[in-house]
Length: 355
Ligand code: AMP
Image (cartoon, rainbow, N blue to C red; front, side, top):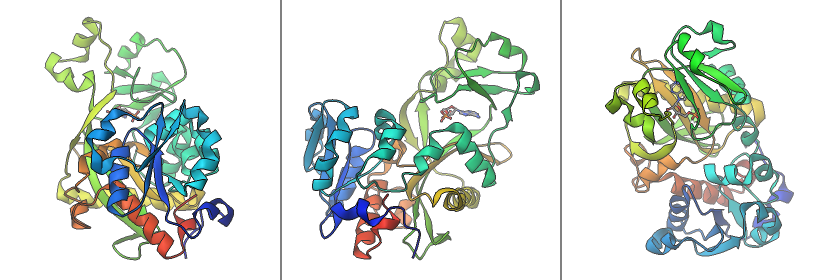
C-alpha cells in the first residue's frame, strides 16, 4: 500500500458512486472531458459566466453538465454542490492560477493529485530547494549582479507567462535594467527547450518503477513564445529594443517535439529524481507533471521550471503521442487521469491519488 494523501472524511462524497470529473472550463479542459468520457466517467465543467460557445463545436469534449459561477472566487461557496455531484477536481494551470494557490488548497472537495505540491511549485525558492536537493541540474543563480559572467535572464518573483523578463548578454548590459520589484538573476541557458510530459502513478506495479509506483512519459512539446520566438528574424534583441519592443516569453501555442532517443535515459532520470524527492518532502507528487528544461550543445539538460499538473502542451496529444502510443494507443494525459481514478476506485485506493 502506498501513501494516503487524504483522510477518509474528505473522500466521503465519493463513497459507493461513480465519480464526476470536474474542472474549470479553460486550459486543457477539452482534453480532460474527452478523456473522462472515453473512460465512461461523467463530467462537469465549471464555467465563469455562461458556458463558452465553443464547447458546442466539440461534442466529444463537451462536459455532461456545467456549474456556472459569476467569478472564480465564488467557487468556495459551491463546495456542497460539487460534493453532491461526486466531483473530483482536476487542477490545471489556469484553475490554480485564477482561484489562487491558497484558495485551491483549501477547497473541501476531493482533488486529483497531492494538493500539498501546490505550495512547493508556486514558490520559486521552494521549487529550487526541491529540485536541487533531488540532484536535478538547474540554471546557475547569481546572488549579486557583480558575479555575472555570461548571458543572464532576470525574472520577477511570481512572474507568470514570462512577461517582463529581461535578457542581458553580459554584466555590462545589466546597466540597462531598472527593476520594478524583487527579481532573481539566472544564467541564460543556450540550447533547445523541451517540455516533457510525465505521469507518476503510485498505483502501477509495472513499467519504469519509481518509489512504490511507476513513471510514464506521455509526450513532449515546445512552447511558442510571443515575440521572442521571432527574434531571429530581426537578428538581435537590440533590434527589437530599437523598435521599442521588449522581448516577452508569453506563451501563444505549442508544437510537438521528440527527443533524440539516446537522451531519453537522461530525462527519465530527472523525472525519477523529482518524484522520489517529492515523496520524501511532502508525501509525493501524483499524476501529470511537466519538466521544463533546456538541452545544451554538450547534451546537459538544465531544468528551469516544473509544472506539477497537466500542462496545456498535452493538448497536442488528444489522440496519443509518439511516447504514449507505446503505453496504450491513443492515450492522452486527460484519459490517463480518468484511468487512474477508475483503477484507484476499483482497488479501494482513492486516498492514494486524491487529496
Ligand atoms: P518560466 O516562467 O521560468 O517558465 O520561463 C518562461 C520562459 O523563459 C521559458 O519558457 C524559456 O523560454 C525562458 N527561460 C526561462 N528560464 C530560462 C533560462 N535560465 N535560460 C534560458 N531561457 C529561459
